Structure formats: C-alpha cells, structure tokens
Length: 257
Image (tube, rainbow, N blue to C red; front, side, top):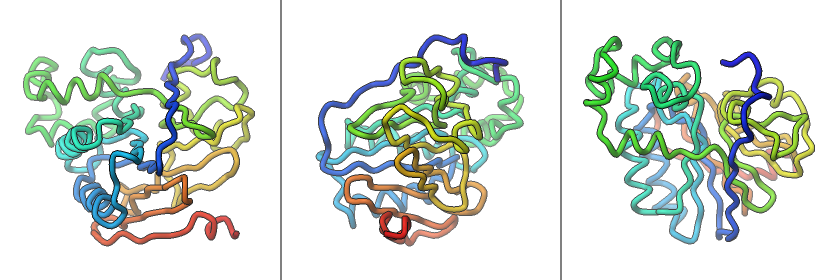
C-alpha cells in the first residue's frame, strides 16, 4: 500500500439515476464458485431476479478460493443476462492488475495474498511469467478486470469495495480508500450523507451500522458464509460455505425492529 492516499486524484463515482425495483448487493466471493452459483440460482428462481432489478457485486471475485476462473465466467454470464449489473473493483483485483503491469497497488505481495490460487485456477504455476499469464487468461477476462468500477451512487446508497475516508467529502475520496481502507472506516461514522454498502472486511455476520454503513463480507472463503442484502425491501440472503441452501432473513429484525 502507499504511505498516503491523500495525494492520489479523486476517485470516480458513477451515479445511477434510475431507481430499480430492487437492489441486491453481493459480498466478497474469493474464488468460491459453487456457493456463488447456488446463490445466483436462488435469486433468479426463488426471488425472480430480473432486468428491473439491480445486482451489485462489491469486488474481490478472485484469490484464496479454488475457482477464481469459474467465478469470472459466472460474472460474465450474468452480465450478458443482466447488462446493468454493477461490478466493482476490489483490492484483490487491484493487486492482480498491478501484478500484470496494468497499474494498481501492491502487486509485489499478490502471490502470497491468494494470487497463487488464482493462477492455479487457470492452469498456471505460481511463478509463471507475466507473458505466460497474459497468454493464458482469456481476453474477455482481462477486460473484465480492467473495466471494473470503483463505486456507484444510487439514491441514499454508496456502493464501494472497502469503504471511504470518514473525514473527507465524496469528491475528496481516493481510489486507495475505496478499495483498501479498513478499520479507519469500519470503526467510525462519516458525514457524506449516504449509507455505504461495502465488502472487504470480513465480519461473522452482516454489519449493520445505520445510517452510516452496511458490511456485506461475511468471510465465505474462510469457511463462514456468502451474504447478499436486498436494500429496497430490507432482506438478507445467506448461504453457508460448502452448502447450497439459501436462508432468508429480515434486516429490520436484525436491527431489532
């Protein structure tokens, strides 16, 4: 990581003007393709996920888990089915891009932070050359990583991977903060006037600190669960690691009414 993120240029946050019927935010996946497939099947079949809804992936699709390639293939398939789906850039995608020479951060520690598992999913040795990696990765996959967004604004919500700097306005945020910040954000309130929906920091269960933030990373790759929040009707969908049965909860009940 850089010593200071304040010197970086402001990050680009895209505003979504249309209000979808429902908004689903998906926590960190980290190469756990089987659980992602089960969750997507549930959302499509049991929740009738469709083009009138918005699906937002909060980043960290790859690394640590065994099936990064399959996760990216699933992401590309859902993009074709639901073109308005939002795919945000996580710090792991940032590390990968830096490792491959496309610009980013902390590529020098990528392999020891789950990158070896990413390469293995593409049939590559952890110490494959950059040229060999680029030759093995489908062009569509490389473009997927390079086109990931840093954040989107929708009504009262801001979707980013990691959070934001709590002492700065929206137009003062840096790409580093949006992809990498942790305790400085999760342990504080902020004054940006949006509820920040984020992943990155794994919690035992969904973090509800309203009106400031909702943390959706529940440590799937560490043996816990995959979580998806639906923000219009206030629902929570969870799937335990290694399972295929999705459980549904009320966010209002989680907040104690």
